[in-house]
Image (cartoon, rainbow, N blue to C red):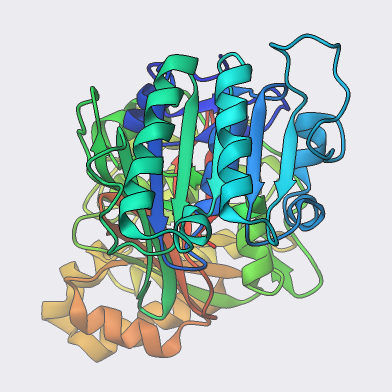
Length: 475
């Protein structure tokens, strides 16, 4: 079996990653079970069922009954099916090797079939085939033609034959409020979709999984590329440990004629090419999101700038110690470490070439940007701005004076990114009015997301790969 027991993420046999709740992974590893997938139309039930099929590696022993669309349409909607199975759909009874215990993978077009005929085909599969996977998409279309007594009797028969055959039986239902099957099946999954700030969020609810402890009752997921993929919960300590692995030191092209790449192609596409040159980007932090996340998100971009020979100015937020800041960008490319500058209140031992002591007579931000631009006149400066220096000087100069000076420094750079917590409302409101791009880091159902607010786009789940950050669109 292709499913890993201790991880919610794995590599499928066709080379594509599969990620499902770890409780569901453990459940589908069992030798035999019945599983009910509920949800209204468009919530992703068919995609989940096919993803389970792929996770099980069931290329040779399955029977898929479709009462909604033809098998030909399924292969059009899910192009990976052809690569996974290695053949186009064949009609029931396609020639195998003659053995009664070998089943050619079958997609049955049941849109015009009578319930009695379909029920007979299902029971034949359960009686004649050893350990098959049978998916009924959807059971509602079959059950609607039976009276209540006949339906209950047939459902009990299916459960009995399923257990005797050692099969895996998956029902799909578009009527979440119908509880007829609930007490019979071993597992119940319900899929829902809702709106969060005008963007769609999909959730899977683990209603019942016999024999498996449900640690987290719901997960957010995506249907990107026709595959169900759920997201792991955000755990700060785990993230910090992964950060120590180091981000890739890419020298990818980051400059276009009008834009600067964010380092993530999916985000660049959402921003119509990337961050605008001479632009200001607002990176807003949800109150429950640590600045560690912002550091991780921005450090890859900073390393890319430096690798391409361009300077980076970092103005700390949350008074992060300069030595800790250096951990996020080490090891810098040989001979280019001096391109990374940290604006700080005093000198720091061992970082003489990386720390700029802030000016006491001018706007510290503007003075630092001007100094770096003077030393690197033909280079592109990335200016990452925290709010610590603003808060330190606000009492003496007043809010608007400080914001004006900070904006002068921001516009003097080639790209400025302001990192501001949602709790700093006055600064957040000001920057939201003057920024060219507004991004938000937030938590929804214990999952970390990046939400582009200006320009508006879909949510992107933030996940750590082995040594990099991935942005997965929630579609």
